[in-house]
Amino acid sequence: MLCKKLHHAAFRCSNAQATTDFYTGVLGLKFSHAITQDIVPSTGQYCPHIHIFFEMEDGSSIAFFECPTAPGEIKDMASPAWIQHFAFQVGSPDVLHQAKAELEHLGIPVVGPVDHDGFVLSIYFADPSGHRLELTTPICAPERLKDFEADAPAVLAGWVRMHKTTEQPS
Image (cartoon, rainbow, N blue to C red):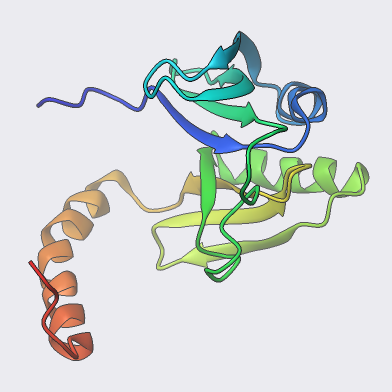
């Protein structure tokens, strides 16, 4: 398999310090790296920015760019707010419920817990830039994962049959 694991997913933030305080202080992630540059290495474009990384237990990271002079929104404002989000897995339903209580104690509004098809249990809240975050934990027996995997192609095929209205350009 070409892709071994998630290295990082990157989003834009409005304030790197507030973002760092939130992801380290509220979620307990490790602040693992920061890069500040005036030139974007992959494009050569002039765009002063800081790129900050927060590492999870498995070595994967969530990262953010603060780009004060670049145009654009912090998050996708055209899609429904619930679509674009980052989900962090926690150890158990008990940990999830404790996290909800702690977030609410900090004054952070929380939605959930929500049971997703007997697959995972999740809560939702926002970071200082308004990015939707999810804490989630598996709630199905491990043997059910094989059933979900086996069912996925048929679920997708049913979706395509029911919702295909026009041919997509190729």
